[in-house]
Image (cartoon, rainbow, N blue to C red; front, side, top):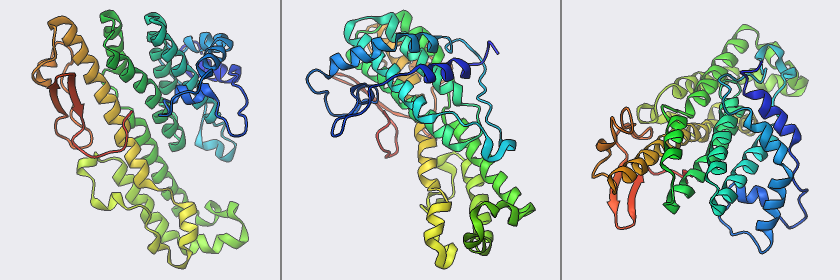
Length: 346
């Protein structure tokens, strides 16, 4: 099992020790690592340093995940409710600790440690990427957010290392972070349809005698909904049917719409996270290429087309529109955005 990235991530999560939250106060390292907009209070930077130092062994164990090419947490549908799902909250805390360590390294000018934080973050994300549960893929998208935010902060400072950028380019090359989430969502939708069609009573036995008739009465609406989810999940955003943006089709559940809100996920929001994860990764790869171009030619290019094939095999399309990212040089550097309105990408 020496190639398995999930093993050191699991071990690091078990070693992780963060201060207990105090009523009315946050845990500084979580806020700092998740890039919360509010500035840290006086003394909290020192608290972050102490927490990171106390978790030195945690981070060194996490280093072991960096170069491992495979991943297996052992989550299998055949185990049903007994499937051993990773402690996702600890994985998120692990990603926040790692990002906090990277931010401290950036403040201190320790480039090697900063680059190691990028690699650790990608390793945590990668360790989850082959598991089948949608909720695990949603956590992977959150993990991605932290190390991409760290990259953005580094690039914004302008004091970048050419060799470091080269190594980071390999981390983000041809990465579609939403692909695993997309596949998990489609597979789970198809799986639920198959299970309920094969044996609908067994599929809802766990709900008990009170809710079982309600669910069976709404089975057709549920199956139709899951089939549409599977279809939507396999289409890029710019080709999806408008119905994919429905928040919840509660009207189809008749008088039991309150139950539908519990049973049926807000798939429109899940699709949004798929799209944003893909877009965030693509923007990161382009931003790295722009910095590499600036360092070699003492300036940013007139257009993104100049990045290929020297820095990028090809310029990625905007996953939200199918077109090109919006790019232009400014007095401060450049502006690079998606062509579609979305929530905060970092």
